[in-house]
Image 1 (cartoon, helix red, strand yellow):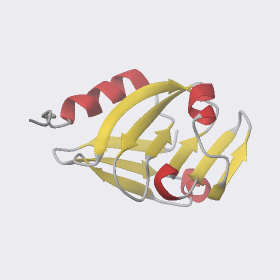
Image 2 (cartoon, helix red, strand yellow):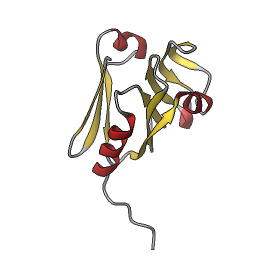
Image 3 (cartoon, one colour):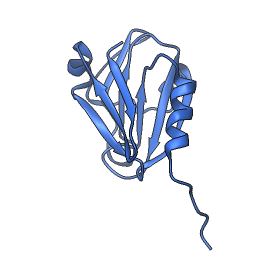
Image 4 (cartoon, helix red, strand yellow):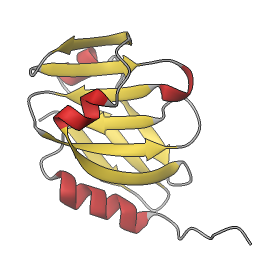
Length: 125
């Protein structure tokens, strides 16, 4: 697997290595924790259904590869998924992406690690 993820004190670093750099059209992305709303595991079918169909730039080969940027504006998403059925979705606020969807060995544990690193959210008074 050529997606590496690391949670630091102030953000999440997602790196694409090998041929995944070519498919995703990026080396990776840094996500400050202030932009991360939630990380959660998702079934591939649900993630694809909730994704825009237009890829700019990107590639989609059903059940084989879905990579690159999908959608425009507030719905823009970054994908790097090969054949996995369980994926990690990281929901964000702000630009340029609304959601990052990647293939990791253990989406449940990785989502827990990211969510535990998030600062506590306060409800408005």
